[in-house]
Amino acid sequence: MGRTRAEEKWNWGLVDLAVKAAGCALDESRGAAPTAVVAANALGAALGDQRNLGAYVSSRLGLGDVEAHTVSTDEASGGSALRLAAALIEAGLHETVLAVGAEKTSDTLPDELEAVRATGLDAVREAGFGFGPLVASALGMRRYLDVHGVPRELFYHLAETAHRHAASNPLAFFPWPLTEEQYLRSPIVAAPLTVCDNAPLCDGAAAVLLRRAGASSTGLKLLGSSAISGPTGIATAIDSLALPASKRSAADALAAAGVRLGDISVFDLHDSSAFLAALSIESIGLAAPGSALLAAAEGAFHLDGRAPMWTFGGLKARGNAPGAAGLYQVAEAVLQLRGTAKKNQVPGARLALVQCLGSLGATAVTHVLG
Amino acid sequence: MQIARSWRQQPTNLRLVGSLCPSCGALDFPERIRCARCGAGGLENHRYSGRGSVITFSLVYEAPRGFAEQVPYLAALVRLEEGPMIATMLTDVDPEDVAVGMPVEMVTRRISADGDTGPIMYGYKFAPAHEVAP
Image 1 (cartoon, rainbow over the protein chains, first blue to last red):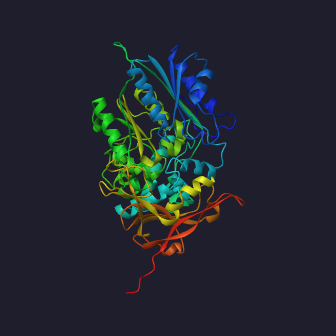
Image 2: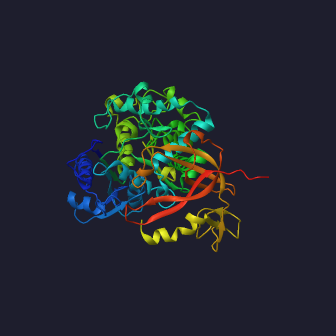
Image 3: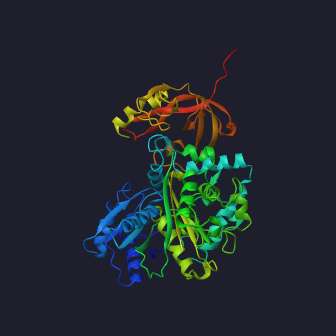
């Protein structure tokens, strides 16, 4: 696997980022020759960037004549790429497949970026009426506070967890701890949502090389995965304060892997906003409805907590390169399972569950690795 | 905003037209081609009353491109009295006076404009409901 630093990488374009991460994955595998590439990208086509990314990455890597696809499922694209890479192998079509996700956001001004991200929601009824992911998360956050009666300040603990772990991740966009005072001073984006409740958009790429497991394989395995698309439209998640696709996808991936939630030693869920982070935690069953923030405040998601999460900073502090989000998760899980996560290591990590979401949770992709 | 796109949205945007499924009775907003509940085709148009109540709201300071001139604006999720939910801006109300559960009704307003010379799109926003005299 390979990753680039999550940052504003002014001197690299979308294809450069993808090639860099994919090249690291190929170098690490010492001579593996993928015969297929699945590239993930969320926003590039709408931002006027390279389309048919898979073909361009394959060509720039000099992979020769390969099968190449590009997949786009909003911020779940990276997870989808790995799922499809695994399917190509399972179908017997290929032995080795490269999954690579990339996003280039820093060429675009924030208001235009938000308008393009908004078209991952209902492009006509939501994006067309001034609703983007930030507004949707703000609406959800107010509803969460109203229904569950929790104090606004408790949301700090989600961001605190992510920043605490990013502080020792040299590839993180925001590698520093976040104090409660900094959090409470954060400017309002759309009340009650502040800058600190939202993951920063950045440039980045991550790649994973997948091989058919042989009888004598000793490497890490993709034990189970599931991709679910449920009802679209922001009303479902906000009104019910639940993410049915997230719940179903996690349950199916665990079942496919033949393990239980309690067996998982390290987690990564989709924290593009504090609202989605809280709902994901509750939807997959790590906390009862309304109690995700309390669990975070008790340190449940710290490296030494009961469900270590965002162990390299998550989207909130490592940074959100949307099309690469799902593959950063996997690359970081690989470090945990290999025991090479250094200061971010969860002792004895044996099984990892990662989940990425698109279109405010309408799409969910979960992988279990071990 | 392309002209044809604006044109085909007119029944929904100006008259709050949605769908009624003759097979299972499900109501949806906006108009659909097949019923998302039972899968039947042949849906009928259904015009909503325009009355509803606020489920949740937000005062937006950082807007997507195309909405900067309206900042700060009130975004809300409104449940129509017939059931379906709608993402809409609130208007004709002081942000301080907005509350969850507040009765609102549809009004027609300018939603967006394509620069100074492009087409202007009109559509629904919601305002505090007028009391009806007994």
